Image 1 (cartoon, rainbow, N blue to C red):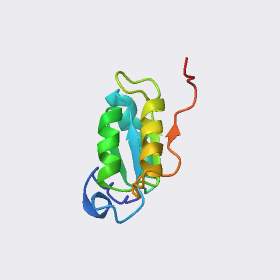
Image 2 (image 1 turned 30 degrees about the vertical axis):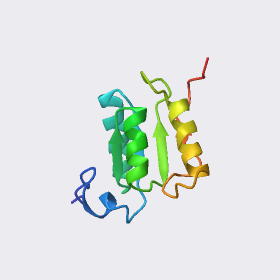
Image 3 (image 1 turned 60 degrees about the vertical axis):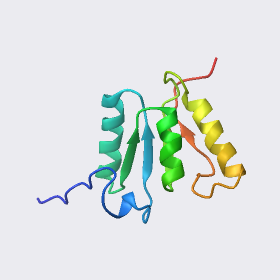
Image 4 (image 1 turned 120 degrees about the horizontal axis):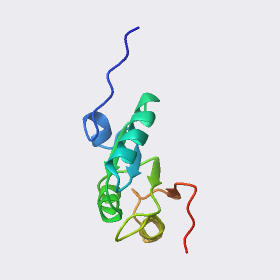
Length: 109
């Protein structure tokens, strides 16, 4: 059985923001790459970011259908990143999704 090649992250039409894509944010490369691989297997382009600040830059560059955030990252955690994305949306950033998502299994203390 032949499989269609997976689009490279940040390449092709998805890089220009012309089709829905998923932003995967995790400071652990192995976790990020594993999640991206599963999503790409579903035929959905992904973009990776290794920190909250990098995620904010990506959100300002293009639109994402979904953002998956690791909640336990050094520096800016997933909760703070989600809050800043929501604030950007409220301030008029049309590229910012309405509801960022955080990975389950962690709670803010």
